[in-house]
Structure formats: structure tokens, C-alpha cells
Image (cartoon, rainbow, N blue to C red; front, top):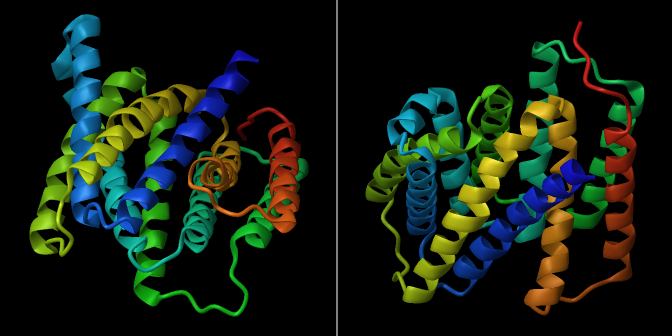
Length: 282
């Protein structure tokens, strides 16, 4: 039960990131590049401070960082923020988690993790529910936004796969965040924002980075060693549903019967998949 609650908390923190990012960009409170950079810096500062207070072994955070995880995190952060300049929240989430599913299942296959037929079927049901929930009928997605969000999904999938092997989730996440900040700064210099940075936008980015991202990703790295790669991908399909519920409760968005039914399909598929057998290897 404790593991289930921890995983649910992580998914809720992930959904909070979507809400905070959406709120900041929709209100024109900050640019996409600035949001991503502040999010990374805030997460790095928070995590390094916790590592220092815990055992003062801050240098361990730099050693625990992995180049592939750093690259994946930077790609996710930048692609995620810039994609939402042209994509709506639902379509963006659909593209993101569709790519994450592909990356996580492919990673599981490369690591020789056997997925049962029940797990695969559950994943299919959950993703079908997500398509029903989020896909806009007859709307062609913008090419640039689609490419950026697909890149974000690739980055997040790689980052998640790397988390299954870390010994110290907190230190590894701190190091990854700190080393991913410079690429975000370079991206901001190359593509300067056209939106004035406001105090409200900075506050949203700091909360997203320090709490929803920094602490959320550290918890995610703590959870990942106990999940098969395919299962880790499937449980993330609940994030858009949680974000939708948050939009209804916090942003006053409308709730339709179709959304409720689709959400039930997503959660049912996830439940079917995660109970589809223990992680196994060939």
C-alpha cells in the first residue's frame, strides 16, 4: 500500500507540472525558455540543498549524474515548454505519453524484461482511453509543436529508463538537474523569449522546479527500481487524467461525461496492466 501511495503521489506531482506550465504560458506570465531554465535551476538548488543537509556529500551528486539522463532531462524540459506554445494541453499530453510508452516498452525489451499478455493488453486499453480523452477530432496538429513534444517524450523516456539503476535517487536527481541547466541556458540565448518575465511567472516556475519536478523526480527515481520499464510507462498514462481533474478543480475547466468515461477506461487499463505479473527477465 505504501508503494502504491508513493507512486500515486509521484503521478500527482507530474500532473502538477502540466498545470503550472500551462497556467504560466497561457497567462503570458513568462516565456517557454525562461520557464524551463528557472524550473531546472530551482530543482537543482532545492535538491543540492537537501543533499548537503543530509550528508554534506554534494560532490556525490555530480558523480551520480549520468550523461544520458542529463541529456534526456534537458530534452524533455525544453521540448515540453516550447511545444505548449503551439499545442493545446490535451493533444500535447497525448503525443508526449504516446512516445514515452514506445520508449519504455522498447527499453524493457532491450533489458530483456518480459511483458505478459495481460500487461500489454492493459497498456493498450489505457492508451485507447487516453486517445478517447485527449485527441481532437479532425484537427491536424502543428508540425513544430508535434516534433518538440515527441522529442520531450523521447527525453523523458530515456530519463526514466536510466532511473532504474541509480543507487541514490536524491543525489542522482540533484546532479542531473544541475548539469541540465546549462543546455537550457544555451537554448534561451539562441531562442530568446518574446514574452516579458513577470514575478508570477517566476513563482510558478520555481514551484514547478523545486517541488513538482525536483522532489517529484527524486521520488520517481526511488520508485523506478521496483517497476518494470513497461509498467513505469503505463502508470504515467494516469498523469493527463490527474491533470484534467486538477484543471476542473483549480482552473474552473468544464467537465464532460466523455472525459469521466475515458478516465475510467485509462485507470481500468492501468490497473489491468500493473497486475499483469511481476517483472521478469529472460
